[in-house]
Length: 107
Image (tube, rainbow, N blue to C red; front, top):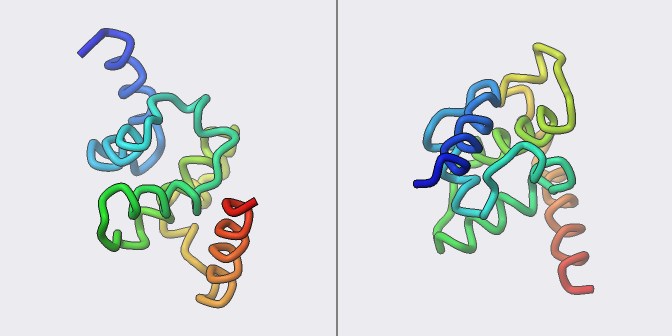
């Protein structure tokens, strides 16, 4: 592993609540730095990870991705730096988000 990659892994580990498994999830999607997360959509990341692995992934990974993008964009409210603060408010709202992501992908 190069020193640059090790440094970037360390950078992702700065995301509150992110451990080695969460960093590996992002790495598997080709994400190695906070800068890369700034413009990304957490729901799309979650769907891509499920597609890549070919299995359902626990939704807490999605909540972690939401928190990670918030943090990468400079978010620093302590309550929002906990993955469980990013749970779905309701399933219908999440379904609408997923539908809009899927529609955008087809365009």
